[in-house]
Length: 245
Image (cartoon, rainbow, N blue to C red):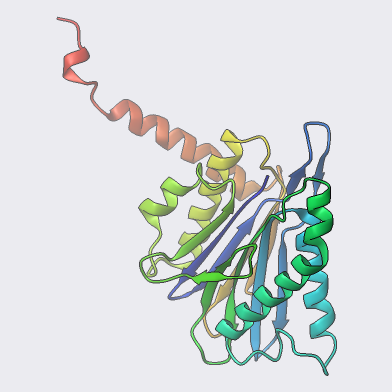
């Protein structure tokens, strides 16, 4: 299992993913789940994946081969982010047509979900959640973030804090708290993490940080968030009907 969250803001975009994959308790490995497609001054796009690792790697390799071939339609030739998301969906369908029957013969589901976001030219940043069938939905003002993978543990803090007007730094902090909540509740999600941010109109990755167990800021966030939650809990009054007379 994995956990990835992407946040679309007026000020830019934030992406966070863990790197743990497992095929059972004795087969735990580390694989990066964030891919960057960047042409500085023209466009920057980020793809995060959850699900079957072989499917996501096949998709990513196909997208890489295309952008490296100037004669081929690719993410670097898409006129806007909607067209780029359509291209990602079509390449995913190509992987399905090639591999789905073989996977089915081995009782393996074609399982993939993606978060894809970025900015092309003067168009505002956009973000999409792409499903295994290659179809997708787009983030909106009312729904400014997407999660894939083990999403339930990290959702409450996002719902309480994140809006389109949230700053990039605040969104990154919120994403890390969301990830910490997930790691604490699910052993299949774990360090190291990839945290990436893009500022609006920069058309390049602003920061891409690898976070392991020794990362000072993440350790501080984990500790102080836990302390703050415990403090807030103890500050709340007990229910009156449970008090002894």
